[in-house]
Length: 254
Ligand code: PEP
Image (tube, rainbow, N blue to C red; front, side):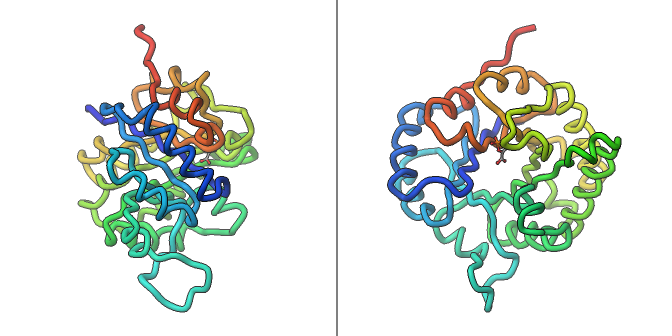
């Protein structure tokens, strides 16, 4: 199944508007001509408009890091799906482990965001992943499947193929400890089977990204695995040099 690789940069709470534009300027030069893979940049909310304008003549895609599930309302400090779409945002990260574990987001709330994003024309990058103690207790599969079932329970069978899913083991995020390609592939294959059970054969088209300390040094091996269709990259997406190399991954010929 030919799934176009997708490389997404999650800039988290880094980059002022000026810094974001300087990075985008460099990325347009270094990866602006890459056509056989999709590249999504997820700056902080404050830089979305400026980055959107700078990307208007580029095929690099604008993404956001979070959103509220409601269209509008008295939700101080929140941003609606429609507000993101209005700025030219096309993808949105939902259920990132930092949202789950630092800000207390639960499957129930995330499950409302997924259809809300789709209704606004946004592609959810829906994140799952186990903590280290869960892995050590042999609970990785239960946790990941529970998050998939809990977060994707409010969309129809037809909507499944519009998703992007990211497997991000919490112990690998920002720690420098990447999952081995084999560890990642095992969970990606599990996720793929569950997505097919839920959404039917069209789920073969869903891209499943790996996230957790992806770097120029490990992207080639990760991308060699059959069910790894791309990467969600935090720290290494903050400089043009490292992110460009990740986007330009090369799968070793076996
Ligand atoms: C992330 O933020 O989703 C992430 C995977 O971060 P890092 O690449 O820094 O581990």
